[in-house]
Image (tube, rainbow, N blue to C red; front, side):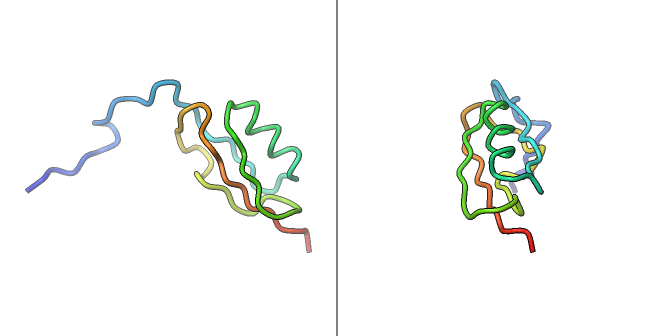
Length: 74
């Protein structure tokens, strides 16, 4: 049987950066925060961020796309 691979067993991601938490931010602020972290935002909708993929704190490589979904405030 194959042994489970743990994250600790994997080599670190070169230039790995943590995805900032954009939840609740207006589109402009979310784009600014992601861009400042070296990430590329992909925006869906208008309003404030309600979801993002990958999630906040995920470790990704610089230049990765972060999908943010926005919905109008109710």
